Length: 237
Image 1 (cartoon, rainbow, N blue to C red):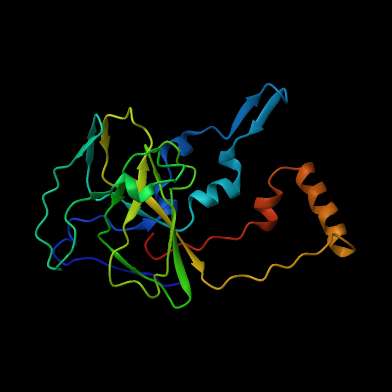
Image 2 (image 1 turned 45 degrees about the horizontal axis):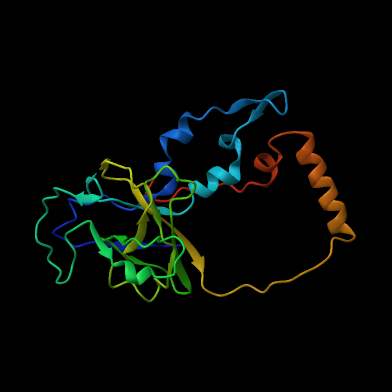
């Protein structure tokens, strides 16, 4: 899969590039202990730091970084980002804009508030037949906002930037959202819908199920050792 990112030439030296998600895992995950004592089990058990599906989900795809520091004070957003006038007409200069509350009427996550819009400073071009699924950075409930998920056919729509709407969830937050904060995690998905096939566990499938479950219960790390695919690093890492 080849993904092409383009930015305004006047801003190239001012922007952080989209980056592989594995390169921006949060500090809380890195500092999490590998094991913790469980009162229920009466012994130490492995934490999610040792759960490959949990970590691999957080490390999958690429993230869009916030291009500058954004200060938040009593619900007011501000920034001091001095960049040149873009060479491209209609190109944004502000890191944020907003959707009025009426655009989210009836949405259970909006709670009557306006939505932020993280403006895009990169266009994204995918190969034919693929779409871009933008989600909230996975397992990142520590961030004071919640991205609104969107799917864009970026093999066709790639001449303009994709903006990323979000709802601000931590209304008590006062401080700085630092430059480089991941505002969206992007996953590349095939546009063609799969065929759903339903079968019963019988014969070899039943035998394989019983054997696999027994192995998983008998010793830790079976998924990681036998089933987890090796991740190829991208050229951006």
